[in-house]
Length: 139
Length: 297
Image 1 (cartoon, each protein chain N blue to C red):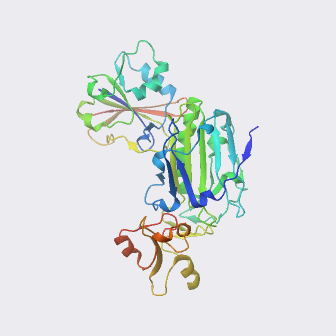
Image 2: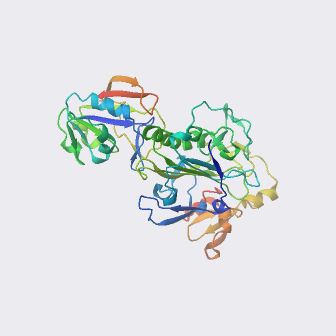
């Protein structure tokens, strides 16, 4: 499965059981890069996507989606641990807010160390963020 | 033109922070957290209060933007700054100079090439666009400003820009007695239209700078372990030091906190829980006592 996760400057992901941030242009980019692959998320994440979902998106919403996602399918993850699924992760797409936010939950993968390697990196403007960064890591 | 509603917050915040649950039902329990209960600064720039639930009422949940700042008190100190921040309050121009404002306790010094203090906005410029408003600027350490307050301001500003929603936002400087420099600030925020789903926090941010000791009474400062010489009588009065090197503390036998005798937490302590102790700090900690988060004995 392919993981998508958003992080702040210190790899924080959540504060007080809430996402640190969101950006409509980021969501639009995620949806446009699915290329027909199924997108998994939980009900909490659906609330930020639901008004912008094109009909052609193959969406699955499930609280246990990290267990159920198959090979090549995309999982949008917010505030959940990834380490238990390490053996099944084919790729991690990290979106950096490039901002300092408060955090009490952090990305639990050390993507700056083996077996992970950075395969691609790209900056792009967001709607409420001057510059977002996309990083693609492969094991 | 923005309305600046002047509000008076009496001596309440010198004594206690009243924290009420705020989840959408607005029915949760009331919790009172005194300054005495705050843990001493360790390595995090802030601590969470009342499980991150701010103290706003149902009546506050309006979609009308406003900002209000307390008038300076007789010591020239700021009080609570309170706003309902919408996109209409956010700045559209670059920040102007704020150097004309001299907040209480402003004795700035340079350490390792960087100034200790910032003129620290209670409500950050990126939220309400306030420039040299003396009712919104306190003497705050660089650490409190950048590591403590700024991440919360960023989160709120980006949320408002993204959603167009409003956020109730209140920052209260917490002073100990007549000290001129705040010990810290309480920051509370709650998003209105989604009833806290987007933004909800209640934290206390420490006005400290690692490696530096601050005299909060005056704003003077020095590197840790490099304290200036004081007259022996003054020292005994303010810190409880005795001539034989031992120190007199006041113990709260209920909360198991210990204080300097002149700490304001002592004044509000129940007599039945109060005990005077003379000896070493280490012995008290070994007995299970913790230092007060305000007077930092």
